[in-house]
Amino acid sequence: MAKVCIFDAYGTLFDVAAAARVAAEEPGREALAEVWPQIAADWRAKQLEYSWLRAITGDYVTFWQVTQDGLDWAMARAGLDDLELRERLLALYWELPAFKEAPFVLARLQAAGVRCAILSNGNKDMLEGAVDSSGLGSFLEEVISVESAGIFKPARAVYDLVGARMGCAVGDVLFVSSNGWDVAGAAAYGFETAWVNRAGAPVDRLMAEPAHILSDLNTIEDLV
Image (cartoon, rainbow, N blue to C red; front, top):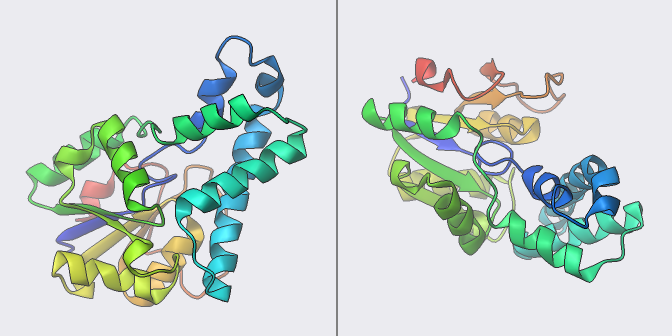
């Protein structure tokens, strides 16, 4: 039985589409309102693609840089040349809300004596901003960034950080992510894994499959 529950941050605990959605609801954002779902999807897709490519080439930059680069591509594709909007979207990314069930799930895990932490591609200050604004900090023992490894997930060096920071064995960990590729990497590493498949997508054809597939975070406690 897992004693340590490690969560991915973006898309798992925090709603990455919220920045574009919230901005689109603001007065004077009619151009964004027409295309915000595309912006949100392209932004996330490029953010991840750039992280994988930089991991392959060894050309590491912070996740904040990758996040800015992904937004620039998404805005260019949508034909939005608006510096003020760009700055607003980036500011909102530091205040992403948690999914509604996240604090309740983390509170129940904490009450059950399960140690909880984040392992994320995000750099430390980005993660601190999201954790603080969402109010999840009191439930988390550690917020672990890939910065100290100098490479993005799913590199094994990133998953090594869990044992180093939490002082636990591989077999003690339940790793939770909404990203199928992240779950595949963690499962291949040896963690028990839970894929939060909010979109009902098929399982990725990669090196390992998730041990558990969930529609949201609510049943995590049943696994630990």
